[in-house]
Length: 75
Image (tube, rainbow, N blue to C red):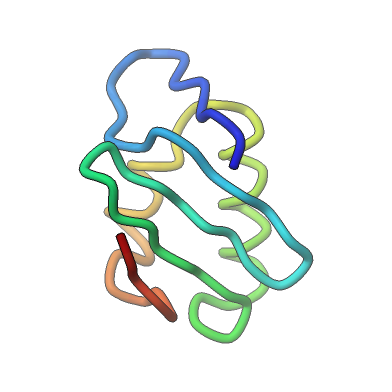
């Protein structure tokens, strides 16, 4: 996983992993969520990937748009 930059130091996200069809998002509590094109839609997934790579806005996007639309969760 890549460290999430968190440019503004205001995110609960610590790391992420991107693949063609999913993004894994690791939160500071240790939980990892998988969001797929099937669970959140291609447009939302592409936005999440872009935000992850920019290091800003991913946590806010998840909370506002796709919070419970993950396909898997683990620790």
